[in-house]
Amino acid sequence: MTDAAIFVIFPLCLAIAAFSDLFTMTIPNRVSAILLGAFIVVAPLAGLSLAITGMHLLAGVVVFAVCFTLFALGVMGGGDAKLLTASAVWFGFNSSLMTFVLYVSIVGGLLTLLILMMRKQENAILASGLPVPPLLFTAKKIPYGIAIGLGGFLAYPSSPLMQAALAQLH
Image 1: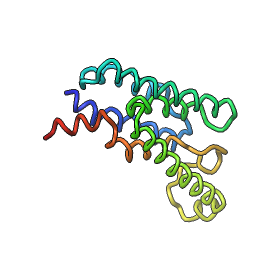
Image 2: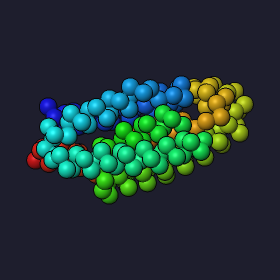
Image 3: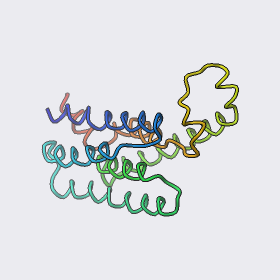
Image 4: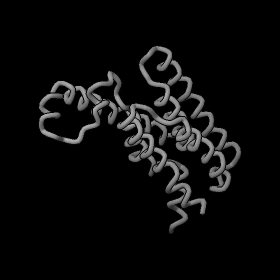
C-alpha cells in the first residue's frame, strides 16, 4: 500500500498542478498541502528514519527560503513557490533534489521560450483553430507549474522514496 502511494500521490499531484496552471494560471493550495501531508504520512511507512525524514523536511525549508525570496522580488508566483517547496520534501537533501531543480529550470526555460514565441504568433495560432488556452495569450505570467510538473516527472525516479519503492518490486 505504501509503495502504491509513492507511485501515485506525487505524480498525480504534479499533473493536477500542471493542468490547473495551464488552464487557470493558478495552482490550488490543496495540491501543495496534499503533497506535504502525504509525505509526512508515507515517509515513516516507507522506512525512512526520523533523521532522514528531517533532512527531507529541511530540503523543503531551504527551497522555501529561496522561493520566498524570489516571490518577494516578484520573480516567482506564490503557487509555484509552494509547489516547489512541497515537492522538494519528496526528494530530500541529496543529489535527486539537484536533479529535480535542474530539470525544472531547463523545462521552465524551454516553456518560457515556447510561450513567448506563441504570444508573438497569437493571431496565426488563433486563426488556425488550435485548442490553446486563452490565458496563455492574455496573462503576462508563465504557467511554471507545468515546468515543475514535468521536472518532477523526470527527476522522481531518482528520489529516495521512489528508489525504495522500486526496490520492493524485485
